[in-house]
Image 1 (cartoon, helix red, strand yellow):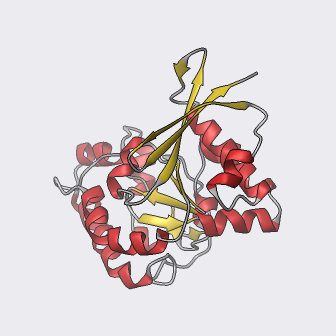
Image 2: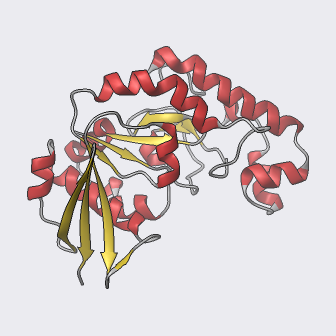
Image 3: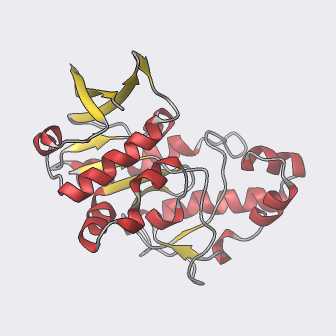
Length: 247
């Protein structure tokens, strides 16, 4: 079982005082490709105007711009799952899981960073960074680069796995799944939930870790107190489970 997941704009800024390297992430053979993007990003912010920094960082706050306008290679690093903050990660409650449950998340959940590309939650070398979702670098679309260069490795990595795709729509641009997979939709009072879907994705991950879910059948038999399966739709490779949110 592998679960594909989105990152968060919010991040913790602590970590160990060591830089990332080819052993920091899954697919070390492709580290030079990650490095191409990270060097491009660093060179851009080194020469960017204030207005350009505001755009690429997605903020006008001078203190935030000043904080991120430095050398990403000198920033503290930490485990991927412990870098991200935000709604989904609040509800995942990783730090409250026991060691076995954390290992499940570390080994089975893949986050698609808009700067670093696909990473396992247990990868250990992620610095704090800021890049607004969807921003290009001088017109260069990072999502297309990762799709072109990492698809073969991802296909091989996922070929024998059941896949649950919990990514937000934008991050589907980084990798198109080429085998059967399962997604989820959350509805309340007959309407699709958008922002709070992040919370339920976190809840789902928390329950999967606690129940050591290894197959789609295992998942379908798992009970989540706040959710009820209303419908399962199948179209080509995609199976979509529609959950209703119950009080």
